[in-house]
Amino acid sequence: MPLVTLQLGQCGNQIGGQLFSTIIEDADCKHTGVTKKENDNYLEAVNERFFVEDKHGKLEARAVMVDMETKAISKTRLDAKKSGKWHYPDKQQFCQKKGSGNNWAHGFCAHGPKAHDDIMALVQSEVEKCDHFDGFLTLMSLAGGTGSGVGAYITQCLRDEYPHSFIMNQVVWPYNTGEVIVQNYNALLTLSQLYLYSDALLIMENDKIQKICSQLLNIKHISFQDMNTVIAHKLASFLQPTVRTEGSHTRQNRLGDMLEHLVAHPDYKLLSLLNIPQMSEAALQYSAYQWPGLLKHLRQMLIANAPMEEGIDWNVRVSSGAIRNHNFSLANLLLLRGKDCNMADVSAFTEPKLYTDWIPSGCGLLEWKQPRMFCQYEKSASLLSNSQTPVTPLNSVLEKSWSMFGARAFVHQYIKFGLAEEDFLDSFASLEQVLKNYKDL
Image (cartoon, rainbow, N blue to C red; front, side, top):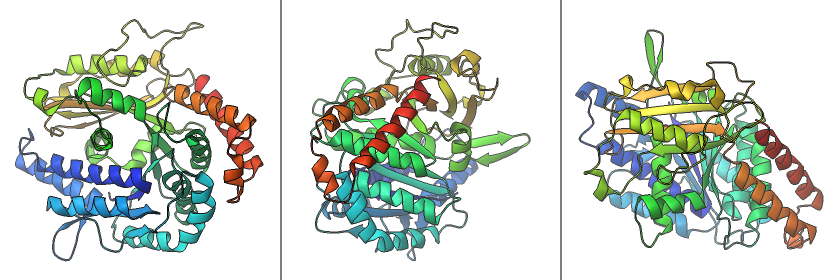
């Protein structure tokens, strides 16, 4: 089922380019651990979901690229073309010569409306290439002006023009101590808007991604490309095809299936993603994993709210009653890939105490499997989770935004592009309710 990806702003375009490259690398993996027929079926599903063949028989990404400056789009397109394995479609890019200056209102109130017709025409062109359209995946940051401001505006337009299509926004959460002084305003305004129109918001926190690069991948001088590679690996780990068994029938996973399970209530749209193992290429050939060990660590990462398998707090235990110190879930999607995945025991993820009290027993976990190995990992597992994980970063954004707004710091920079103080207050009220909902799980 084809997905159309929207790469929004510098961050979204860089992640998008890395995501498509990761998908191609996985598809090119020679050691798949499955029969030729199974592998051919997998590759066919990969190509249909993320690519379409152009008139020359070359793979063309199902993507629309948007930025108010040209540099990121030009570089991403050039890198794709140099790979010789895939490319972006011609004339499916929208860019201008002046960015949004890290001002959300400039992107949402000015650039977005002016570019509306052009961008939506590009989206329509890409959707019309799909035989069975599955939905939209948008890639964007929360901190800047174009990715967040234009991204929020375009998400609203997608909902208006495609009211029955699924929309997942993958958003990059800024560093806790970032370089953009108004990043918390931008994050506040983006999240409150996306909550109105998106089906799900998949959060990737910069601080956690950097920690993975440093402690697991042993990267000494971490670049944005290193971090984008980790994000792309995480995204591909659940977006690549898996098999879902329904009685005597099997079918490939769809975005709609994921979101219908994970976001069963419209007040809870914030998703997080854990995957295991994560290691450098040099360490990969010397490592061996078994399913019991992998799943034990993954479960502890979930309940202890840990971003990686190293340094987990093993003292956190699943509890019930008045004293609850573990990370509660609303719903989880577990994806297993690789050798003997059908023999893995996932019962530890079905324990009722993992989930909030009002989830019916047996409804918290959805499990998908793929016997084909993923990106050279003989066995790997990913957990897409709707849980309390976003509480801490969301609380931080609200506190810092309130502190600045109380002094009316930089508010005039947003008002001059059409935003009002009431818009800030509405955003605060919206996200405070979201925060309360997740705290009360």
